[in-house]
Structure formats: C-alpha cells, structure tokens
Amino acid sequence: MRKFAPTLFYPEFLRSSAFLFSLVIIIFINPFLDDSIFGRLISSLLVIGTMAGALTIMFSHREVIWFVLGMVGLCLIIEAVSWKYNNDFFIGVKYLRNSFVFGIFGLILFYYLLKVQPLSLTEIGNAISIYLLFGLSFGYFYCFYAQLHPLAFSHPANTVVEIKFDLIYYSFITLTTTGYGDIQPLMKVPRLLAIFETIFGTFYIAVIIGRLVGLGSKNP
Image (cartoon, rainbow, N blue to C red; front, side):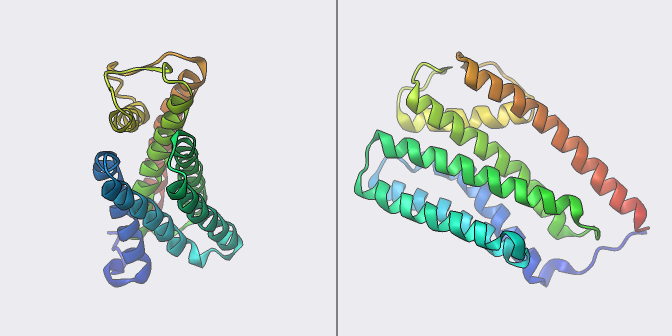
C-alpha cells in the first residue's frame, strides 16, 4: 500500500495549504468587500497576500522566481496607483491584472505539477489551487470585459459589486461545466472564452486524475 510521507509539518505543505486557503477566502469573501473603502482595502490585501503566497511556493523554482517576483512588484505598483486614482479605468486595470497574474501562476504550478514524481499531500493541494487559480483568472477577465462592455453579459446584477460576484460565480460554473444558464455571454469574446474554459476544465480534471492515479500505481 502506498504510504504518504509525513508532509504535514513540511514548509512546502504549510505554504501550499496557506495558499489554497487564501484562494478560498478570495472566492467566498472578496466579492462582498468592494462596497466600502475599508472593504476595498481588505480586498486588496487579500489579493496581494495571495500573490505573495504564490511567490513563496515558487522559491524552489529558480528559473521562474525572478519573473514571478517582477510580476508581484508590478502588481504592487498598480495597486498603489489605483488607490490614488480610484476610477473605472483603474478598476478595469486591476481586473485585468488579477486575471493575468492568477493565470500565469496557474500555468507555472501546472507545469511543475506534471513534472513532480512523489505523490504527496502538497501536490494534491497544489492541484486544487491550480483549478481555483484558473477559475479566478477567467472570472476576473470576464469582469474586465464587462467593465469595457456593460452589455457583454445577460445577468440580474445592478451594481459593480454584484456584477463582480456574478461573473466569478459564472466562471466557476463554466469551469465545472455545470451551466445553469442564469448568466449568459452576449458577445463573441466572452462566448469564445467560455468555450475554452469549459474545455480546459474538463481536460484538467481528466489529466490530474490520470496523473495522480498513475503516480499512485507506480508507488504501491
């Protein structure tokens, strides 16, 4: 029988768990924080903290650490400028920034997940984090596109906060191929992205399950 290494107290496992927990917090709490200055501050700290958490996970990968560090630095600059000039333009810039950074982090972690050999709780936690990262990446891009084109989606939301919540919700519904139909893209770009996200979500689950089963069978 395959025995898991005692990774509970390993720094890698603790960093992976903290990163996964921060993503869960962003998904469930962040959409409710943008209706006040204090809430926006907490929201910004959550996003920046998550990016810093991704940075700590990638410390062992020297070939990408400076690239990731540069992205985190750019994110901090955008955050500072957006607080000074709080308008619709910089709200859209922050949506685009979050989409790009979460997507890049997801791709990097996915690349290293495919290369890893031992099956451990750390890798399983990272696999879940990658799934959440791509859901957030697509969701924030939908928010960015809706900021540019308010009629890009058919949804019941009336405020910016509700639109953000609805589109992140829509992203995960699309990623999991659930498709309730309560929110619908009305333009070509979000429709194409929805198609790609659905294909990616199905592909990712198949690849990860196959990868984990394959690793488990090699280590009886």
